[in-house]
Image (cartoon, rainbow, N blue to C red):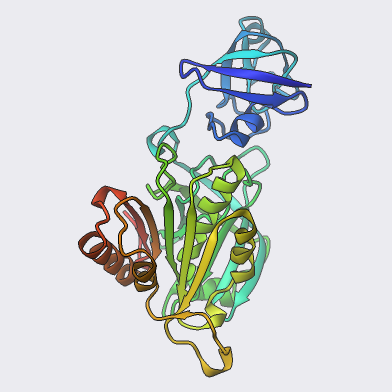
Length: 337
């Protein structure tokens, strides 16, 4: 059975299946409602049912009392529809709407995907979830009080584990700890979400993503989010690296091509053993060669500062890109402020 949900005051509406929670259906259709634990325990997703009936599911009494139920309140992470619904709820439209939290997490899985790149997956406590926009980052809080910042590589709809792509930086105390000492089940403290690198969904301009190295992580999150909610804007991904091994998840990126996203890997120092037949040179120059006029596009650039800065300068001065159409996150390998 399929029902319709209408949100007030925005007047947005979306369809929902009888076996979906309101939160699940909203996220699926690109409407981000407030939430935290996603388990009926915290009350962050509480909203009012103005019309219609719901099954309250596993909502816990301390988060939703009987009196609140009688008054029409529901926890949207648990409530499922029994009819068409009209709901009163604010929607998350920008980072200012999302609370920044400090919480513990456990190292769930470590996968070395290149000689110097580790994919780290972190699990939050059972009754906690991190609400974020695709492309944002978190700080890992260390005992020396210096936060280490890493972009989230997973999309918000796939948030059971937080995914980080960590490059081993010579002389980097934390990254060397990850590669030499960290093990599954270690406990970390994180703060987030942080940053303003996220998809502007109110535009219809074609998107070009420009990533270098592990700058691919937030691009992956944004692309997977865009595919999940069915964004139809043309999208291209340019991923630059020194050698073939540095394109550590290239098969995954190339799999997006079946869904209409063109992926262009570019190597700046291809080794003879790579037998590389693809594009070479600087990744942002490959974009310029393909798109000499960027006046009608949006650019999302992430990676080494030298790449991001060169892309901004050359795109805006040489390719007619409006400054307001350039969104970036530069990896400085130091605490972000």
